[in-house]
Image 1 (tube, protein in one colour):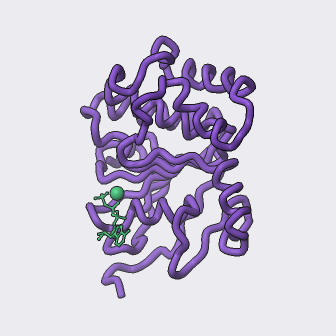
Image 2 (tube, rainbow, N blue to C red):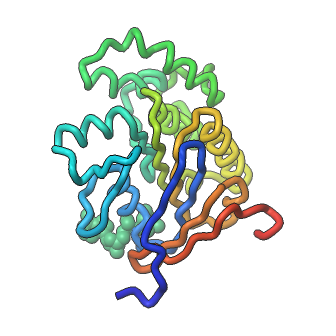
Amino acid sequence: MSRYPSTQFVDVAAGEFAAIVGPSGSGKSSLLAVAGTLMRPDAGSVLIGGVDVGDLSDKDRTKLRADNIGFVSQGTNLLASLTAVDQLLAGVHLRGESTNASRDEALMLHDELGLDSKSDKRPHQLSGGERQRVGIARALMNQSDVLLVDEPTSALDHDRGSQFIELMADLTRRRNVATVMVTHDRSQLARVDTVHEMNDGALTSEVSALTPSVM
Ligand SMILES: Nc1ncnc2c1ncn2[C@@H]1O[C@H](COP(=O)(O)OP(=O)(O)OP(=O)(O)O)[C@@H](O)[C@H]1O
Ligand SMILES: [Mg+2]
């Protein structure tokens, strides 16, 4: 039993940028894995677009994940041998779909994220921030409705981290995505719409619409 009062749930609308903050080991990445249907919860449920994903078959859950959910994991997990644009097409290829049709979307996302001059570079030729942007672009392929981002600024200095958060806030609105970002850096919450806190594996509070003036 947690010694903190529990808020029980996180509800994120399309076009909303939500943050989950909490100390290391509090369960933030685990919550993202459950929210993204990578892990089944021991208790509770996950609803995406009103559908309880616990009611879906494994096959339907995998399809929902591939079609609707973009992940950016802690460390971007890019494939060393692929160029920046091919990172975005690898998932399309794995699903057995034609990558030709998706190449334009991939290049458009690169353009939107300021990566257009880097499309033919491999991960070791990119900076940490550029790699993170490739990770975001990959997560947004196939018009994802949900974007789950784990500690996106941990490898960046404060200014680059702030720029990156700005970019995510803009993308969230422009693409009308429901974005959940996990972080333990409370100095990066100015552009976020809602902040949820986690402690000892439980959601403990929600602070709505933080503005820079209350930081
Ligand atoms: N696969 C696993 N099996 C068992 N325990 C795990 C597993 N993954 C994580 N844990 C434990 O669950 C707790 C929460 O881990 P989680 O990775 O969700 O924390 P976190 O809040 O993301 O931490 P950090 O800020 O360090 O990334 C930790 O105590 C961790 O040791
Ligand atoms: Mg984590």
